[in-house]
Length: 313
Image: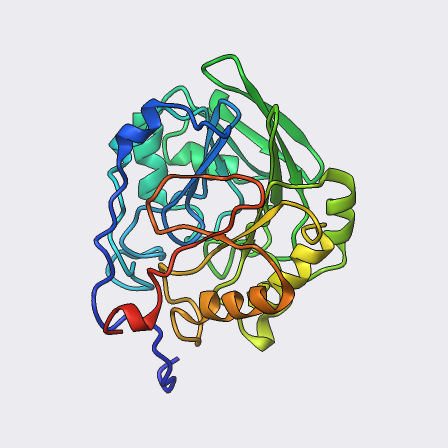
């Protein structure tokens, strides 16, 4: 890490990016709208249900707020500006997916939200202030139904991924990690969370697909880490196995653009993915941070906010 000459953090400030929270006053016309806040933090509005995924508003993805990977840009809105949430989904307990201060704040600000998470992560949420009766833990293949304020519902199904867990070196593998399918009345989304390549992607696609939006991680990759992180090449491969080719489904890259967690340049994951997508005829859906955007089948969205040519990086 010390000897790396890659541009692992931007040399000039990114943004500022700002979310216009007034947009949430109106439901998405398409039925599916997504706001990507950077890394894996995402608000999914699916057929009348609002689900906030892996929120991290902290300055650093670390147990310490004076050391560790620091954000490239400030949160695009304050937590208090979020619309009423039907659920918060926590895929696993790593610091770049479960922010302690964020969870504590949301527990106060969104007391009626359900919290859906993986096995044994519930006690962590409870210690951070989430009411026990609001927490649902899922094992792989378990499902939970989330009721929206408008009477709509969304089924959340936990599925395997190839990763690991632990918030310290002595707590490895004490909690579960997972990927998830979100199935509303009209749309279906796959959130791969953190995962290395494994043969189960094809079975997930065959059993639970097709998906309107497939969210796969592309950052924090390394050749030696293929068992726990996909990276751009294996994201394309997983998208193929999940059934993304040959239909209107879109590939949304996550787990990049906010924290330096590997040796590669900060913009390398999306740059490499964009090149691969062109050569494999894959349609990407990658918005500007904090910008709520409708997901419409077959319509690609590829913001160039990250391009080195657009800024002094």
